[in-house]
Image 1 (cartoon, rainbow, N blue to C red):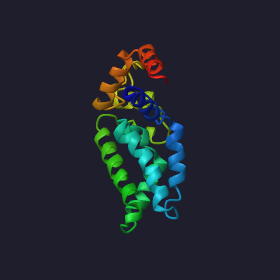
Image 2: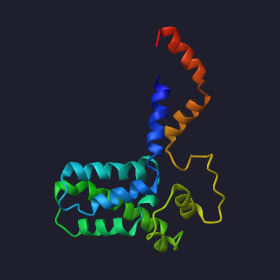
Image 3: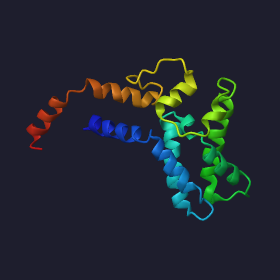
Image 4: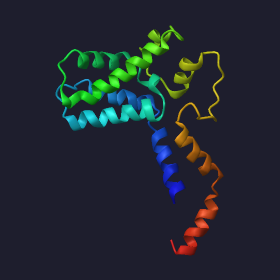
Length: 166
C-alpha cells in the first residue's frame, strides 16, 4: 500500500518535469501584482517542487521568469509575495553558480527546456543522456523508494488484496 502511494507520488512529481508546466506558471505569474496570496503560493509551490524536490532549477531559468523576479525584487517587501521573492533568490543564485561552468546559459534563457536539455546544460552538451537513470532528477529519498518499487512484485500485492477481499 505504501509503495503504491509512493509510486503514484513519484509519477505525479515527474509529471511536473514538463516545459508546459513551467510555461503555464510563468504565464500565470505575469500578473503577480493583482493575484491573491493563495494563487501566488500555488504557482510558487509548483515551481518549488520542480527546482528543489526534483532538483531541476535549470528548468526555471527563463527570461520571462527572471523578469518577474526582477519586478518582485524592486518593490517593497510584502508577505503576499514573499515566497515568490524566495524562489526568485534561489533560482538566481543557482544561475550565478552555473554561469562559470556554462557560459551558453545566457542563450538558454530564451527557451523553455525539457529535463533532457537541463541535463545537457548542467553536465555538458557532449555528455550522453541516459534516460534510464533518474539519479540526477530526484533526491536520494525518492530514489530509495523508486528502487523499492522496482523490486516490488505487483502480482504479489494483487494477491494480498484479493485475500483481504479488496
